Image (tube, rainbow, N blue to C red; front, top):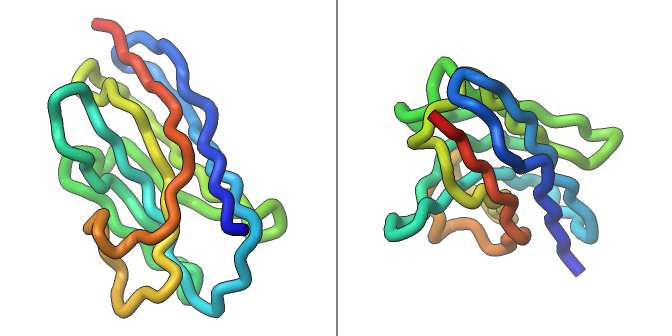
Length: 125
C-alpha cells in the first residue's frame, strides 16, 4: 500500500522557516515524481514544488521560487520542503503526493495519483 506522510507544520512568524518532511512507503515505482501542494481556505490546491526520482530535477511555482527548496533523502525515503522567508500568504494545508508514471515533471495535481494527509502551516504577520 502506497503511503505518504507529511509533517512538520506549525505556527511561525513571518520571515521564519519550517521544514516539512514527506515520508514515502509501500511503492517500488521505477520512476516517479514527488510533489508538494498547498491549499488555503477558499482557494484551489496549488502545486508548489516537485522533484523527479530519475534525475533529481526540481521545479518550483513562481510563488515560492527562491524561498522554498525541495530535496530528497533516498536512504530515508523522505522528501523535504525547506521553507524560508515565510509570508502570511503561505498559510495553508500542505500535502505531498506521488506521480507514479511521470511522462514529464509537472505540478498539475491531476497527474498525481497518491496523496498523503496534509499538515497545517500558519504564518503570522
